[in-house]
Image (cartoon, rainbow, N blue to C red; front, top):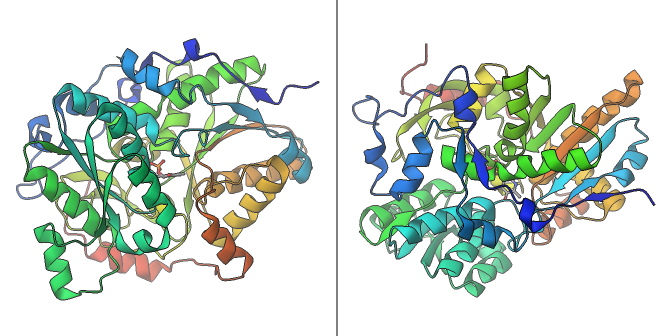
Length: 454
Ligand SMILES: *Cc1c(COP(=O)(O)O)cnc(C)c1O
């Protein structure tokens, strides 16, 4: 019998995270204070994050130890399996060999607990009693609820109102793990009250929910804030994905030519790709790493590289990144996790320096890819994950046209079992092709008054 699934033992869960900053020829530029536009130091973040995470955020150390207690919790679902996609290869009739790393086996169903557990651990170490956060579609809120529950930390989630109403099961997952979930905007914060005064029926937005969670953390010494993507320490924690995948590709007797992952803020892409990029940076290997984004929110393929805010309201430091402008409001596509205006700082610098590539796919194309995958491989992917599948299919089709074989590895970063409404809309023909115009992008970027990067 041929081997389809490549598995590692619990003892093989990596014991270090890989910090790619140590290997980057051009280090990321510093964050700037939103008022003075001067570089800010790590202590500016102290009201929001525990010191251990701030140290990781600015660390230049190449390898950072994973605490034993974190590895013990990882072992509930890690190492995650790596599959050879025989079914998909057959369906595409391609000479390419396709593999995927499956992160949907975690308790909340995506890669996000990899960082949620680490973040909850360091908060616990520093005596933090409560963590406030925002969630859009609910993946991050449920991952953090699971992690906080484990360490006996209270978790307060500001969930965008429209998702709160449309995704009751994600909210109930958070409740099951003991989290308190608010429909944002709320009357609990000044930011929320201000929005409600303007529009009592506001559907909410991720930007508003972030403002509420940050305000909560900044105004209570026992409460910290936590973010599920974008930041350096979040990407760092996700690098266990790629490290496991390297060992599993060895088991398969193979090695990828192309590594692909969907892209929201960059954490699952970083998680799979950075450990492979190390071979390019250290040994001059030439593995192509491709970030896959929605064509309705194309910051990597059509945005600009400059300083911008991480949130909509403008409360965060200014970060050097590929952005569509912090006021950019993406179309309400179902891949909620990819509807973010900017990109993480490290990934942005790597793209600028041409160490990685990016591509975009339309909403309809990704659901076509997701349904094809579900039929061929069995697993129903998260709408975000469908973007990586669409890129893998595109590359496999190129192999077929050109008559050569390549080894393709992609990150199946989550399952779609709580996203069936998105599939329903697709089946009922309610999803439309959506391409934003250059004018819309220009208009959004024209509102940026932040420093250009030379
Ligand atoms: C949050 C999320 C993403 C996007 O976030 P990244 O930080 O870019 O990984 C992608 N897929 C799933 C399933 C998610 O939950």
